[in-house]
Length: 459
Image (cartoon, rainbow, N blue to C red; front, side, top):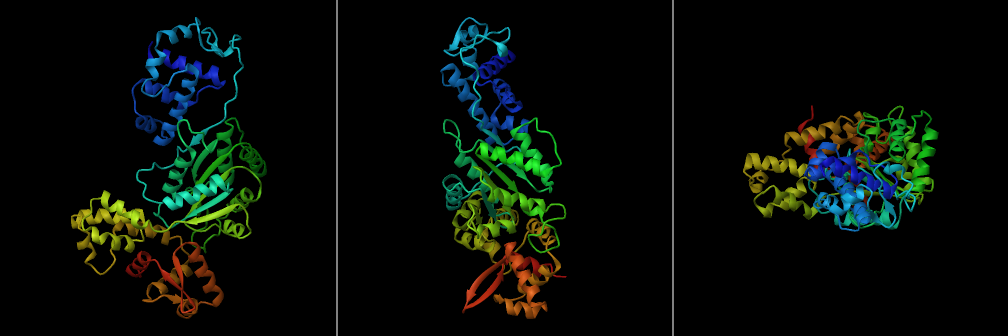
């Protein structure tokens, strides 16, 4: 049998067993497997993540194994289908199982099936737009917490917060991989969908996009209430996990934290609706700053929680080891200087390799904190989103050698009490200020990396 014959037979077997035709990705996986391609190559061709391709492949082999009564894998798929007995079945001379008969003349309309096709349970993973996980370090405690919130506590909405580069997206994708299971394990979710809000899609666009995953024939509508009503039906019917990344892109630049861009205020109602209305799904919101309606609802005991990612801590040693940095005794100080931030550490490790031959001790000899150009560029992007008064306060705090109180901030910034409180609160929402208690006085400090950036770039 040539590739097309084997592919056609596989499609007919699966249709007769499930009553559903294969989609584009499933067909591609089958065909490329017959051609000897790896999952990695298939993922590149289909613009899907390798994890997603492996998952769909595992489901295909499981279905075929159930049909044929043999353990089918990617490696033996073609061999088993080319078996003479199976080939005879394809031309109508035998039965594969007790409940299926394949008739080549019109297999999709055959009246000789002993059982009608059953609609299978939906298990769909749409991570095509998600970045691929290259490295994952530590985060055991965070994974355990999030898993409990989703699987045991069945929270409706979770906000995952952290400064840029701290590993929010990577953690969320690793979480999905761990809790949803592969192979014979029953998945936790019927649908897993990842979408980024980096380019600020309107809520209408976002809802339409989601609905087309559940029902490809969904018609476009400008009525948000109609779209929301339809989405709620699916969130109640199926166990879904929807990941929205870069939520902070919905907020207006140049203003205090949490203020939506003009025309995007309906997202606030959308997020609130998914918290307050009963359903069996989970929305995971990833952001660099707190989402105001989520913070409010969290205090009202709704099924919503927030997890703020901090330093990788000792797990960041893996980054130093992978980058083959020397002077292990200096790694802890290096990690602390750059807040245990995996992306920042990776940028710094590149500089240490290129300019200091991997010698961390030599790099650390300089008293000043060094910010490589790539790190400065990343900070610059965030800096441009701050409001003028936030920049003013941050510069004042950056020039202090000691933590500063609200009262001292007011005096130095020459802002009113109301303005100062609002600005400090906004910077806290952006996770740019750390609060601590000293001698019964609340004081604030600035992240050392941000402090260095502000001092170095002060005009």
